[in-house]
Image (cartoon, rainbow, N blue to C red; front, top):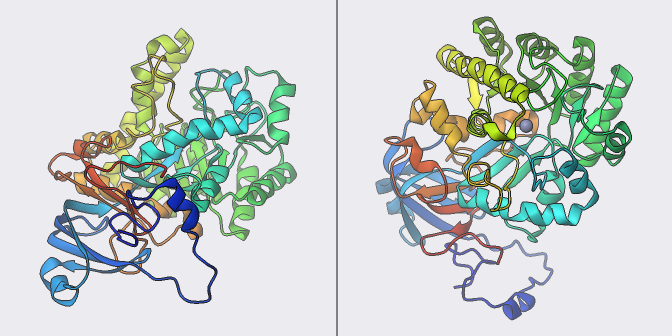
Length: 460
Ligand SMILES: [Zn+2]
């Protein structure tokens, strides 16, 4: 079975651990052999453009070589191994997640996560599997430990989606990511280690902190354009970084070919961020017609993150009365904002703000966990998208949220990354079939099959 693209060269289910030790590829100048195979589908959804009935793709190594009607592909590639799925579509992208290893809904759990990074990594590992199992082949992490986790995935130590991380979220002092309930020296200690949280005040500090994210390997820069919901002392309606600070950070990021994604609820922050050149608006809760028009004019992308809001609304006991009231108000505005954005034709990408899986003993664990991320597509359809548009937001639009760092991925298209999934139902008839791993029959990432019927995603 070795080299069979169905299992991938390193995922042969007949192999043993002893086998793994002896299967080191010797160093050689020769081009590595590129596996070539065909996947044919009853329905092929390319990510962007019209679906093809009875469509196929040809894969060579980690790239898609050809896409078209099965009848034409079968003629030229009849000699290749062939796999059949009901629906074939690009692997999905969640463009707003966090890998923080939190096992409790408490601020000090973030300190523990920073101080015990091996433990944090171990806690994140099952979440990476859950994402891949649910058909998410790429994620954009907007603060967390994703850079280290991605390194482990690239090395083959872990199995999971490709992670494009911002490393930190950058906040002004007293702002959304300043973790208000923590004593200042504890928070400063987090910042000193260039972990997931940073504060900066004034243009020179803002430049320095953006450069620190570049040093850490960030592929996108995340800043606070407005106050937050979960943060204790600030107001989501208020703008946070000044226009001058935001412009300086956008310019600094652009010099390194990075774009900025801004956490923005209130309209003032959304407008200031867009005028400063911010390319993705995260949450966008108070977006109205005028803000939607400016987003279209600026070519910006909205990442709404409705899932975390809906989960929050169903978890009243975990909020203070004041916190829940704050969430309820923002939730109402955000639902209107989503509908406005969709009606106006703002480019949207799917993001959930999923943070991690809680232990089964926590009553929230069934609700809040990685792997249910495609619920976000369901909310987008409820808010006015067609299922095909929601799939485009979850696939082709994903790489757009990384600007120049975006890979050629998210579409079944020649020359694009061989990241795609098989679904045993038709998501154009019921978008809900994409939620959870149940209907995701196959997952390929970089041309390697990680899941097929009877064989789930696993580490080895
Ligand atoms: Zn977030």
